[in-house]
Image (cartoon, rainbow, N blue to C red):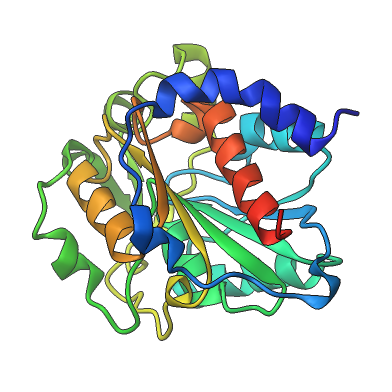
Length: 270
């Protein structure tokens, strides 16, 4: 098995094209708190949190790359029934880790890690086209200040749960994903409780206390790209931008895996 450093070198060439020319948060990003833990032990654990209209398998391509780099990876299966339920699922996964851990999230999962990320073994947070509400913030009101993404018009409700229509999923959610893979993801789509978004207000913002990284999707039709940029800047995250749809974890797994490895290396004090 190759080492994390060897894998990082191999990914750099592939990821560089995707992130070249992307402005970072500069000096402000350097002001983020640095993690500390006994003996500055290497960060070998990663916990991944999926978003709405997805399940843990949406991280598969990233998982393979992280495992090849020697990381111990856990992908949470969110019930998508309430913020409390999803946070509990994430906290159970964090409790199983044997040391310092990077907590990464896609989309809705960003709300979950913003609440759960204060766990003592979490050394850094990685957001991928993800929500990042402040404590007590009305995220719906915040999002309304930015362009409305096309996927919003493709939601179908039945029995108290919502999902994306097939057209909306393939075009707006999984744009750029090969059709065969996109259809498989659609079949495994995580249906969300209709009350999930309106009732989910975080009581803490872990990103105010932990180092953060953010991957913006420049071609996102599910979350406003402008909103993603605002969130990344607000948290002073180390930021990359990808020519990707909402599912950069599928279309750009090298770049996302590299971002998580970068967070792990920083968490190790290297």
